[in-house]
Length: 245
Image 1 (cartoon, rainbow, N blue to C red):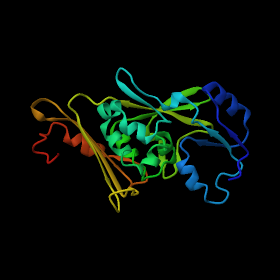
Image 2: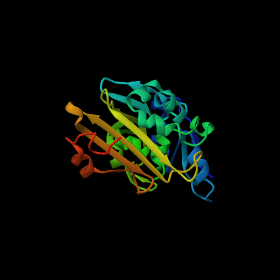
Image 3: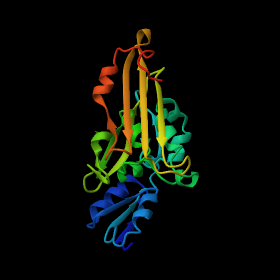
Image 4: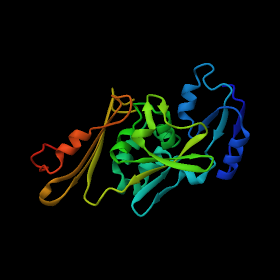
């Protein structure tokens, strides 16, 4: 991997300064697990400037806001799987992160990297879609938020602009009593690449009628898919009569 430079900024100001001074195309690196695999292809990252984000503690935080859970892009799958906040307010994401690879990989690979890689088999994508997650993007200190489903365009392609990186995930808190779950199907029970992922959120109202249903499927489409007609059609139905778990 013949990169032109390597940067490991110790703060966001240093990151922005380094980006403004660098002319080469940027290669973002957090956990580096995807980069190491992709670098096997000769010339894949040649002539890039590497910006290593692992020295930025603000990107690793998991925080509760008034109506949302905010997860830094540098939080690892292991941190997310073990987080009481994620287990409480976004349980399908915690379940998905707990099934990513082996423990060594979960301790290194990051949520932001899983999203930026935009692999259809990314285990976190279906639950994030079902949780109505939005992605906070940062370009030289100017931030914007886009829905996760709008950020991922196709396998390996995102709407990230040049010199823009994923700063955090914003996930609206699930209401009290919401039911949710995550299912992963692979060719074997452990250390398997996903063949199908399914995430669901169910909110019941009065008389056990469905107030809200969210369904997201991953791995079998080019990007995580929601099913608006099915979700809308379930509103007002009895949970007992709808064959839903």
